[in-house]
Amino acid sequence: MSKKTSIRIGTRDSQLATWQAKQVAKKLQDLGYETELIFVKSEGDIDLTTPLTEMGGKGVFTKALDDAQLNDEIDIAVHSFKDLPTENPLPLKVAAIMKRADARDSLVAPDGTGFLNDPDYEATIATSSNRRRAQWLHRYPNHNIVNIRGNVNTRLEKVEKNDWDGAIFAAAGLERIDLGHHISEYLDWIVSAAAQGAMAVMIREGDSEMEEIISQLDHDETALCTTIERDFLHDMEAGCSAPVGAYAYIENSHVHFKAIALTLDGMESYDYEEVVSVGEAGELGHSAAQALLSEGAIKVIEEMKKSEK
Ligand SMILES: NCc1[nH]cc(CCC(=O)O)c1CC(=O)O
Image (tube, rainbow, N blue to C red; front, side, top):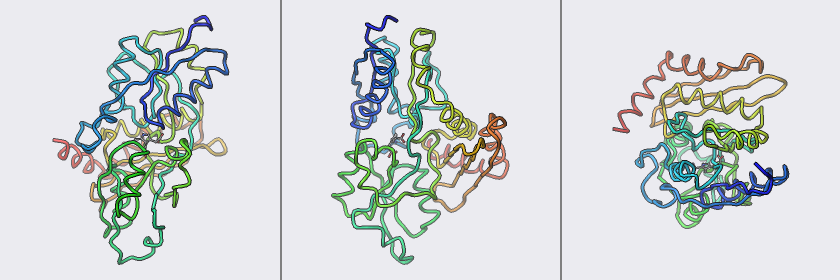
């Protein structure tokens, strides 16, 4: 591509998605390319009342961007990697995974977190993620979980308006749009979603020109860690709405991997933790899923499939 032609970057129009697309634009401009942003509305952004778990889960946030890309209205699409289904039947592929930000979940508690120290207090916590719900109830069985929908900004507004005790957000989502000061506590004990905090840049399959350009943005360590996490999620056959978490990070040339699967009520949990050298980590996500499934986590998946029917 001549550097004069501008790369059309497709993005959802939420503040977070726009920030992420601008970040990719900046990296491409640093490499000498011109860019333009094209905004595409997704089903998940338009319908703000139906819980995500009832909207069919897969691809709620990505379908509109996929269509725009297949129709050649955009050259590349910027996604939150955790929103991308692990199976993709379309002729689109991830060409770069950007360096990951904070992968942790966080609690926004407008009146403080003191209630967490009172074992008798029946707190109300908002989240529409089964993974967050199950892990929260595992630790705080007498709390109540309520659904909350919307993009990061509208969810934050709802937390301030309602009399819930708190709501759970991806730290990266708040921090990227300068709302990190609302975070009351980082939830280190919650295993985050596969690929949380990472962005993926998609191209059309066979677009070798874009592949060459975009692959320059790929961050090796993030790619390895998120691949392990997504292999795990894929093999659990769990889908993005399942009560399943997976997180890998690299330290001293070793991959530290943690995974969890729980029943929806949080009562039973299956945990996996391992440290292996980077060179031996290629199959880690697959072997972890096999281990948890044979230990009994298959029950979690069957429960999930029944609830989706
Ligand atoms: N589920 C929606 C979504 N997709 C990506 C992020 C945040 C950014 C990221 O995790 O990469 C969020 C918001 C949230 O989970 O609170």
